[in-house]
Structures are given as structure tokens and as C-alpha cells.
Image 1 (cartoon, rainbow, N blue to C red):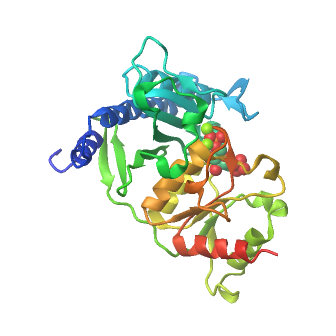
Image 2 (cartoon, helix red, strand yellow):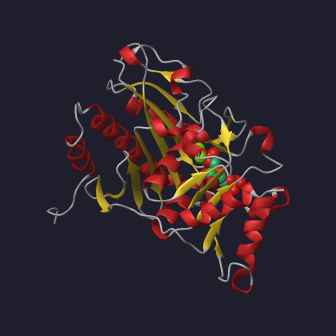
Length: 337
Ligand SMILES: O=P(O)(O)OC[C@H]1O[C@](O)(COP(=O)(O)O)[C@@H](O)[C@@H]1O
Ligand SMILES: [Mg+2]
Ligand SMILES: [Mg+2]
């Protein structure tokens, strides 16, 4: 039964064998992240039976009210990754400050950033949610990291991934040589390679945007969506479909699976805060994955992966997906009046 089934650990070890000077630290870190996601997958699956639904009656640094699973998933990620000596500090959507590894544990050479539970508004309605993570190199000499050590552009990422807690639990990740998907076999508790070398179709007829924000949109986005909605009788000469799951992980997974574009653009409602989604643990990791699968990711004006971060919780406009559609949206921004 298991002869042609590659576990994520086997896959990573084989991949690391091709890397000069690989020490195994990276594979071990990924294994700790995998363990954390298995624990979260279990909690999400049991939901009300283990009392993890509902609000935590607390607010995070973004001023958002936290769900119990936001807080619990954050704790699971910290505890799974702080002890083994692979990371020197972490940063999370749910924590205002960076989290240096407690003194009793050895410091490692990596920095780990994560959105422990993405799509929080969907938890209580049993719709797909996820976890997003990004790995950067820490400061030389394993010195105690500062915020400045985290502020590296997306192109510096060593690895990016997400776990989707949907009808099945899947982990999708890149280390810079393509994108691969793994499905959790609940029976043996292992992620098995199920979607090797994911590629995004350059063209698509499906867009995802929160249309309830339409009155706040800027003209390039209005123009693009109007043309999609005009369908085959309009300038695009083809009909478009729309999706909005309100879980970025699920939207990106759909795009990796069948193409499309996902947008949370800058609009007159979110422009004071620079956008809605967070650069370091949402936009950058998803952009690395999308680009590695042949897609594009932009703010409309610049490649997201080249943005020089100024803070750990910085927000940015996000437009990503099928290359030819994203290029069209960039062109509309260039001709914006
Ligand atoms: O509530 P809206 O405007 O539909 O926004 C949905 C977006 O917000 C998010 O839920 C934000 O992420 P968190 O749930 O991690 O805070 C994204 O996953 C999703 O794309
Ligand atoms: Mg999120
Ligand atoms: Mg979140």
C-alpha cells in the first residue's frame, strides 16, 4: 500500500540532499511545523466537541477580536517550534512583539513567521481555514534577534507554505524549486505527496474579490471587474465566474488548482493602513508560492516579494494569480488617471 507514497519527510530529505552544506536543521524545523499543523488540524476537525469554537474575548495587535482557535493555534505553533534549536525567534499575526526563543532553549539559525489561523471569520461556520508560514535566515552568530532581523524582503524567504484545513487537510510548500502539495493521511498521521509540481494556468476566467467593498475601489480594479462582469459581450469576449471564500489560504489553493486571480486591493477604506492583508505572514509567503508555480503577485504597482518591509505587521495591497490576468491588472494601474 505504501510503496509509491512519499511522505513529506522523505520528500524534504531527498530535496535537501541536493543542497550543498545542508545540515538537516531545515528539515527538522519543517517537521516541527508539520507537527503543529497536525495538532491544529485535529482541533479544527473536532471543533465544538473540544470547545474550540467561538470568540476568545480578546483583541490582537491588529485591533481584531480573536477567536479561541487564533489564540490556541498560536500557542501550538510556539510550543512546537521553540524547543528544538532550529529557530532563534518567531513572529505571529496574534502577537504584537516578536518572540525570541526562551533562554532555556538553544537558538537556531532560522526565523519563523506565521499566521496561525487564516480565515478566522469562517471557523464557527465550518468553512475551510488554514495556517500560513514563512521561514527566513536569522542573524549571523545566532545572536538574539531584533525586529530589524525580520524585516527582509520576500525574495529572502528560504521556504513558504500553508496548511489548508478543508474537506481534507493539505500542506503546500516551496523552498524555491517549485511547489508541491501533500495530503494528510489521517490513518497513519502522515502528509503524503499528492500534488507534485503544481503549476498555475496563465489565463483564467475566475476572479475573487470582496465585492461588498466595490464603492471603495480605485479605477483600475473597477475597470477590471466591470470588464469581467460584462462577460463575452464585453471587451474580454468571455464570461467570468466569481468566488469569495474569505479564507486567503483556500483562495490561493483554488488558484493553484485551477487558476484565477485573488485581490484584496488598496481601496479608500483600507488605504490609511496600507491595505488589508499582512505582508510578512500572508502576502510574502503566498507570493513566493504563487511565483514558484508560474503565477504573479503584485500590489498593482510593485512586485510584493521586492517590498522592503518596515514593520512586522505591515499591510499591503494584494493582487495575485494567473500571470496574464495579473499583467492586465498591472497595465490598468499604469494607465490609471
Ligand atoms: O472579511 P473579508 O473582508 O472578506 O476578508 C477576508 C480575508 O481576511 C482574512 O480572513 C484575514 O486573515 P485572518 O483570518 O488570518 O485575520 C483572509 O484570510 C481573507 O482573505
Ligand atoms: Mg490571515
Ligand atoms: Mg489569522
